[in-house]
Length: 299
Image 1 (spheres, rainbow, N blue to C red):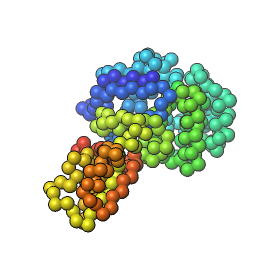
Image 2 (cartoon, rainbow, N blue to C red; image 1 turned 45 degrees about the horizontal axis):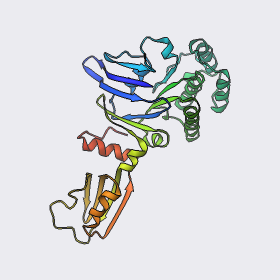
Image 3 (cartoon, rainbow, N blue to C red; image 1 turned 180 degrees about the vertical axis):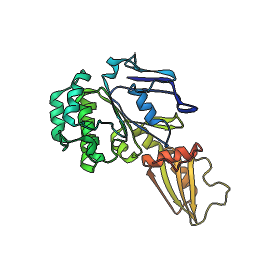
Image 4 (tube, helix red, strand yellow; image 1 turned 135 degrees about the vertical axis):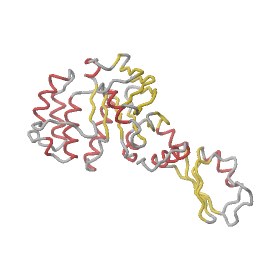
């Protein structure tokens, strides 16, 4: 279990992470999303023990993380731009990791070298972005981490590699209770994979929710009228997040269940009414707009 308690990390006068508290249960796949500069990558680096918080604490299974080699041996972090030396190959990096990570699994290493079509003796820095990510994944998964942190891991991966990665992650979460945290702007990819979603903005958590319950909570509704009701606000009493009008047609984002709002809409005698679930992207844009934030930098 990861416990993040009132953590702040600043760089000069900028608070990259600002008094953030969060608990992440073991065996969870958490999607970390938010606006550009919201603190996602900084948080991952603190979870990996790369950065020390200026204040607050991070506990990994009850133990302090920073400068704790035992705790760090259970973690692996793949940054947005994986770093390798000029002469790094999969094979010579594996030689180094065998000594560094106590849970290194040789059979798993051989397995993933065959799963991902990456040359083991090829210089990694000369590979494409997608192949570099696959090389990093081979090495990361072979360390058998209990906590795997991935920053924009889907960027550059082809559809087959993305599907393979998701399958592998799900298997390890189910079989080994591995905890995975993925920071990404690709909400469509996270929607297929994550149990929970954490929305960050300006270094803080706006929302952290179970993804299934989140899907049930919002609906996008289209309502058309032959004659618009002659009242100041036809949708008064309905928890609308956003309303857009085009002539006699209204497109509404509503927070609530259809059982709650449909009787109120039908009472307005619409010519047509239809409700559909929102995508994850639509939910977060609506939430950010409702909170008064500029959504132009999200996804």
